[in-house]
Structure formats: structure tokens, C-alpha cells
Length: 409
Image (cartoon, rainbow, N blue to C red; front, side, top):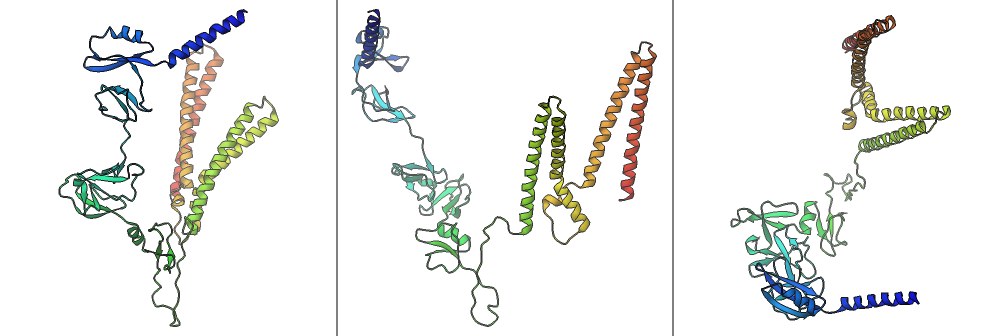
């Protein structure tokens, strides 16, 4: 019994809440600090109670039955939508102090930003035929100000004529946009490529299908026969075949393949270095997995070095063998083996010098804090002596290597 009583009460609460939400709204409009505000309530009593707090009432509490269609909304206003709003469909209960408005549609520009897409052009505007115009649907006209129009309405005044536009004179009345520019037609684009727009049946040369022409026509380029004609004095046909590939020479193809495989080698080497590191971490001291991990890392590092140094090896081979052809820039500008070795030597000498100085400091600290211990004093002396010997040997090796390099040129 209690269950049914609770269920009945819940249904009653839901029913009356729904009725309250579906009930008509009662609204009033008040003038606050020069601005009109509207407040709405579900009952006339609540509306009148709140209305009593406002001294300047523009419209008293009335039932609001709006036919303003979404996304438009009824807002205070004497029949005129404010800036940034356009009139919406419907009305606001015939109230002269409210108006049905929606957000303004963003303006669509045309003619390289000099014009605007509209349903029709105004008295001080001219319609411009823009071949790339975004004007469609309800705003099909590309309208530009009359002052920006030139060449009998066929051109637009710009600061400079950009790609796809041709200079057709000057615009003396607009100092900031002095160039009168007209759009290139499809015929102009075809002629710039050395062809002309003709029908498919009339084309006796190469069909440049990537260049658009007017409907029913194609861009056709007629090749010029080689000087002298045919050897036998008769007529001969001369055909030009377009290269369907990106590269024109075998050298360019080889260079592209070199760059591709070099990138693949570098990526694969890094992947296998990471795999080796994972094997090393998860080996748990297993000798077999440790060996496999070390081998993977070592082989990957060797492959990485070879992949990066491939242009260097090609450059050295070309230097030794020679040739009368020009080598690719990627190869000719590659770092030489001599430069790589010298850079490696300088790096090692820098490391040795730094390590020797660190060990000298360590030996000196052991000597200072020996506390009279003969063993610690002897260990400190040995560290300092051998660090000095290592530093001297490194410096001598640098001098010897540089002298040998200078001797052999």
C-alpha cells in the first residue's frame, strides 16, 4: 500500500511540474538605466509581484505567446533589430516594444575581398563576374563599390594584380588601389601554356587536360616540327610526349631513392635500438637475452651510422673515381670522411682532457683528506700522475695526427 502511495505522489509531482513547464509565460518589460529588460514567470501572480519592484514599466505583465521561430528570439526593441542582428521569421505577440531577431549571417566576400555577395547590387555598386566567386544560393551577385570598378565594369581596382589577374590600366581615383586588374579567362590560361581552347575534334596536337577551358572545349598545344622537315622531302609528323613522372633524369630518380632509403634506414635503426633497450631491461640477468639485446643495439647503431654516412661514402667514391657528370647536391655537399674523423678525434680529445682534469681533482682531494694514511696518499699520487700522463699522450697524439694530415695534404 505504501508503495502505491509513494508512486501516486511521485506521479502527481511529475504531472504538475510538467503542467507548470508547459503553461504560458507571463512577462513584463521595464526600463532600467536607459535599457529595456524583459522578465518572465510561470504565473501572473509571480510576474505582478516582481513587477512591483520596478518603477519604470514599459509593458506590464501579459501572457506571452511568441511565434518567433528559432534560432531567432524576441528581444526588446521598437521593431528594429540592433547591430549584429537580422530580422527573424515570426512575431512577438504583436508587441511593438519587442522584435524577433537572429544573429547576422557573416558577410561573404568576393573579387579578392573587394566585393560582397548579395541578392542584388545597390545603386552605388556594380555587379562583377568573378570566375572564382563564392557567391551562391540567396546571394549570387558579387557587388563591388562603383569607385572600385574599372575597365567598363570588367575590372577591379587593386594595389597590385595578383596571380590569375592581368593589368588593364590605372585607377587614378583610388590612390590606395591604383591598378585596374581583370581576371584571366580560361583562354588566357591556355594561351599562357602555349595552346588554344578548341573542340576535341579540332585538336591535332597535345591535349593539356590539366588546364580548363570553356564547356565543350579542351586546351590543345600544337607542337612545332623540327627545322628542315623530313629528309626525303615529304611530310612528316612530329609528336611530343609528356613525361608522366615527377623526375626528368635518371640522376634525379637515384637521388630521390637515396633520400627515401636513407630515411627508412634511420627510422628502422632507431626502432631496433629501442627494441634492444626493451630486451635489455626485461632480461632479468638472462645471458642469452642480454647478448641478444647487445647485438640488436650494436647492429642498429652500425646501420644508423651507415645510413647517415651514405652520401659521404658516395662523395668519396666520386672523388676517387672522378667523372664528367654533375653529382647531386645531397652528395656533393656531404661531409667528407676526413672531416668526420677529425671531428671525432676532437670530441675524444675533449672528453679525455675533461676526464683527466676531473681525475686530477679527485686525486688531489684524496691526497688532502688522506689523514696520514699511506695507502690513500699513494692512491692520490697515482691518480694525479696517470691523469697527467693521459692528458699529455692525448695532446701529443693530436699534434702527430695534424702533422701527418699536413704532410699528406
